[in-house]
Image (cartoon, rainbow, N blue to C red; front, side, top):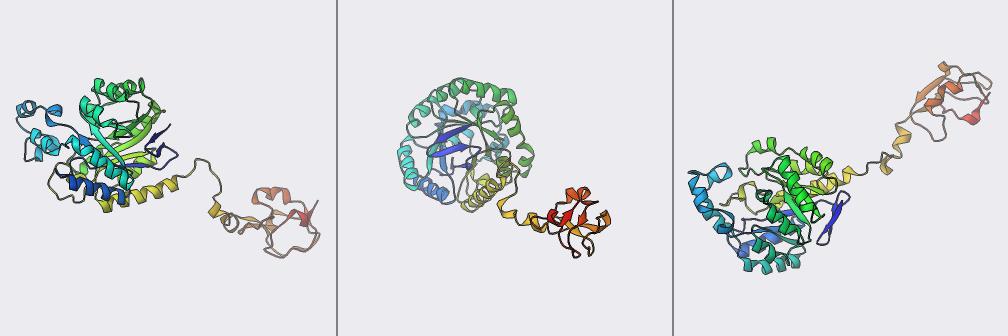
Length: 355
């Protein structure tokens, strides 16, 4: 399966597509958001992603307060869930400015929509629509996005296989352009999260959904999970991006910085080269090795013309001189005779042997 996002071909035979999720790391500043776009591009990102939501359209202040305590990654927030989402929201009138800056620096612009109005507004600005894990079972929203006719990128965190199958079938019934991201939605930046990312799920997705592009939305430190995912067939990678992980905000602690992002991209490009082809052939850079490390048949002692060969007169030694008799022919030499004197160690050739 191959699809196109912007000017990028996305699929197994193409380079991994990296999405820098700036998310709430703009910290309420348009200037900071524009700066992060530049930094992401310089670090090797293919897309810069934001999130378009308004707090009243995504969270219930009453509902979260009724929980009488914040849990998971929200437990460390110093403000209420509603207040954090209000602070993190991007004004819709930033959109054309962000899109223009992405175009100017040569990076795709994305933003995840979290309500129907946001989907409709963003549609003319984005090359694809990204659906966050939290909306995987909101089928009405999945259908609305799928009908836009653009590639759909779906994260699958905090979901079981039944949830994923339902969402995939809902989207594919309308739109065949789907990228499916394995994801774990614990945003605590804990090292324990490595135990829960379960990259082998990508194998399951490949078996169940062979006609979709696979990817990873990751919130672990570093890029070990990214390399593992790419080796398993992921070709879209989304990670959060900031310039300083010590800044205050919900997404900074587990984000990549320009330096760590560049390292991730560079190591991934090396991995892509190393993955190479599924066809087993002699590599162009190891042709000489087939001579110096393989063996051929050689005389174990000085042999006089007319002598009849026995096994004891034959050595199997490196190098495998071109034109020499290969070691798998040793039994065919026994009983033949030398047509000329052959010094010890010389390669044996059929032209030097007779019946």
